[in-house]
Length: 313
Image 1 (tube, one colour):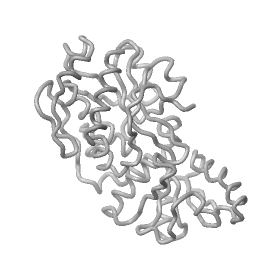
Image 2 (cartoon, rainbow, N blue to C red; image 1 turned 120 degrees about the vertical axis):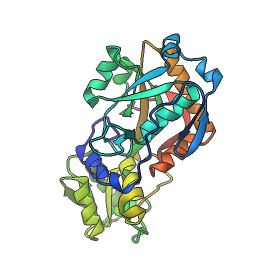
Image 3 (tube, rainbow, N blue to C red; image 1 turned 135 degrees about the vertical axis):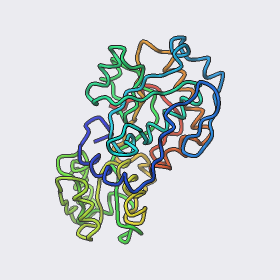
Image 4 (cartoon, rainbow, N blue to C red; image 1 turned 60 degrees about the vertical axis):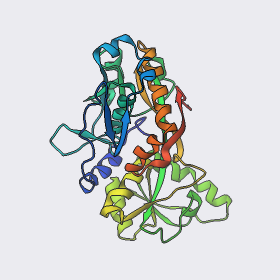
């Protein structure tokens, strides 16, 4: 999986287990059309020049209607199970963008496979739901890309085996959820192990990511490969951040086989796309984007420049 292109339930379920260990961090559900808004502990204010870029329809309403599929940690979560208040990376980013633009980003849960059709039907203006920007989707919506995510490596606290790259998994027992892109990644890396004169990766498959993490906790494997955002979130939250570490490979900052995630925007609202693009760049320039991502343990998936329709497929 490269986030939300083919969503495996296991990654979401595993990360969801960790939600209770991090204190509630959403809640400020509206960015006032004017005034100050606090997101991830930082105060943000309206930029009039950015507000002026918005289409008249959005200015008049004071709201950007945003679809999101919940839960999918760390991107979108409920603060408390059974209650509607939202939190997560996408939610916080939406509030930050709203603060800059001087409008409210109002999030509404929507089943993932219905998000793009709902935008086409005019029910929503945009969607923020860890959606992979790809060329097929670009036929019906535009994307403002805000992160790159692929596969990551989770290891025990302190990284006792000193794993730094995929090559360090050769000849070792490694956990992975069955029937995922991460399993395909490990299988495809076997040739590189052979070329380097190393033994094959001893791939241990599990029905769920949470089962793979239990094996890692017990020392039955030296690492687990899962989506990098989920790995970062688990490393940050499990055991108050004292159980696992996330491996950061400088050659793959967004993860292995990373692809861009984008905010999907209605093609009927090109001015909104442009306004969001410029507001996102302002958050990048001010360091606010990385600050939000760091809150969820995934600062490395942040991009250095906001882009539009940057699919790599």
